[in-house]
Length: 468
Image (cartoon, rainbow, N blue to C red):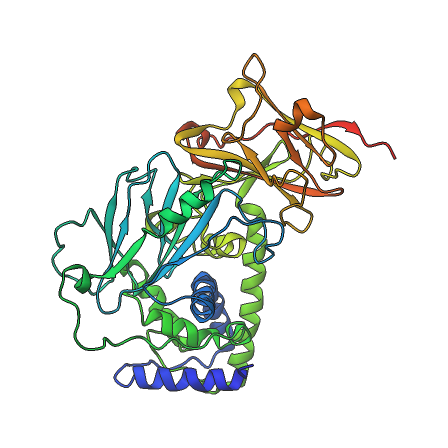
């Protein structure tokens, strides 16, 4: 285990080397001023720290910069890495380093299937989407360029996405129908056709010498949770072209040692100021966590998340919301891409518990999820710990891609219970655990009318008490 002191030593050396010619203003000696600045700075930095933690750990574990990594299976009950995983898509990821030159991504034609390339910048803004909703099913070649690139766009590039920072994360979701035999294999074949290239390679003029790379400071959570967050923040700011709207804000942070590539040593702060910064971090985290209950509405037992993810224009100045969104669900989608209602209780306001009751959800024809034909909707079952549930059907989600039985009037009844509702109803059965459970609906590419006002699924209703 790397010690906190060693991490800080490495950090100090990196910051010193990279900032030989940088100017650092005089630090404040006033604990009250320091606390106010630190609280605002930590809220601003929080999503960036979460983003960098993910980047460092993923690259350390299984990835290389500028190369795709593919998951080759849908999440199931044995996957405990993340809570409330989807059972609808397989993931591919690529961390792009744009320091030297842009990266070119090729996507093959993907007809009759949902797919999405979500591009996330260092602030956790959703830069752009390439996929079924935005660019269509045909083959697409797009390029992602960093803040310092101003070259000519070569032939064959369908779209250019510009980033304010040197690092961009691309999260790829490719739809799989788990109830359609052989569909996963088809998607695995599609994944292998996702290609990435440096622009020089794409143009046939590869660099003959090794290109410089950025040294990534080792990440330690205990450092990030202390005054040490300033060191990480300074490194990240050094990888950005600070937006004009935030130059004054970032400049104000310099009073506690924050700035692009500034060296940072906690001992440069007085003991009183360090204590004030630590108090500010605690208060900032409390505000971030409390914000989670204020970023959606609750109706008929469902929590309906509002627009808490988006591009810079959408998230401009909403620093506390951006931080809360990162804590609630890092890399969440824009509502136009995916809408995620979560069920909190049944129609009586009671906790969902299949050891006590069977349940149903009844959709009238005019209250079915409002989904675009390019997308789909699903309802996923989780246990009380928010993991997928073992069941005899190996069915973890159900939706419009399932072989459902509808009523003559176009209505749909879904059965949520532990034991089978009977052979004639099993097509519409989503098995539950024998106890408390949780539900998430996902609407991939919702229709506009489902977002204004926000669509609320019908309430989950008790359908009979379980006899002991």
